[in-house]
Image (cartoon, rainbow, N blue to C red; front, side, top):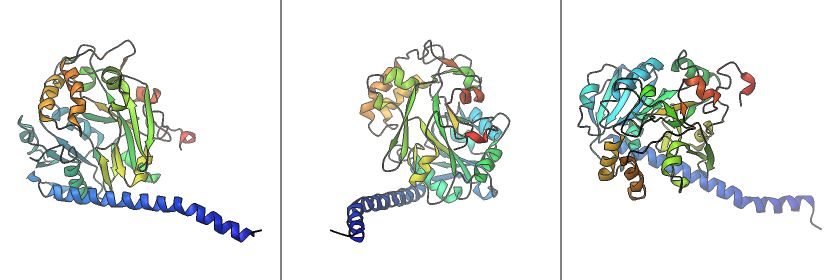
Length: 363
């Protein structure tokens, strides 16, 4: 009969294919990451600087990166919100706005601005442009990467700024913080708001869906896939797998070897995707208050049907944009009125382990 040594040899042979598959998968992901970084570097060469103040960026300053187009109405509140949180410098790509957005931004001393005239969709929905700026200027900084209609909140953000938050993460060796993208909407039909222009976003769009949300892990990148909420309820009830992805990784201590893969929904290397497991995750996380459904959503949806820039397969989402143009009412009897960050913690839409004096909850 074979001895113990023989049995060990046989076991090793049986395990080898699994190890080989794992090594091959890791190699492919490393290669994918390099491709994304080089693609971003090439795209960055096509950006036209309108106001480059990056030489003024201080060591340790918190940076914000965004691509936008025709966001003149949102810009004042967007900048005010992130300045209050402690962002020191904004690095913004304007994708050929024609509403004066670039003129609003180019003379502000804490903003560096570039123009991109290429296709938003062909630039991986702007991520190639931001990837270039993150590679050039983000290394070693805590970086916030968001859209112009996303307002990041986190537990106690009304009294503890991003410098305190990032110091907390640094002290624990945590490389970033995930967030749920939470769609806000009015009581009335789309195309209207519950407060006049100039009022805070959460007054104009005061309601949200507290659930249900679900999270799955996608292999081999280990990226999470959170779906649910109001857009699934209203627009994708018959095809929930088509509903938007709601998890994001908007706050990262950036390194040149990092890359966003699918908007800010997933990243490489894969370990970064383990930072966030969606609603119910006890670890410190945030929420991106999503102002998509301001009154201009109807006009923007008409434009998107023609421009076809916001989905990889625009035809598959044409019915969604046509439904938005019909201006439905998103409010229903289970809608919840926004009251502040602590409400989102209590609803388990964001976590606060350790951050709010509960070290036993840390995982």
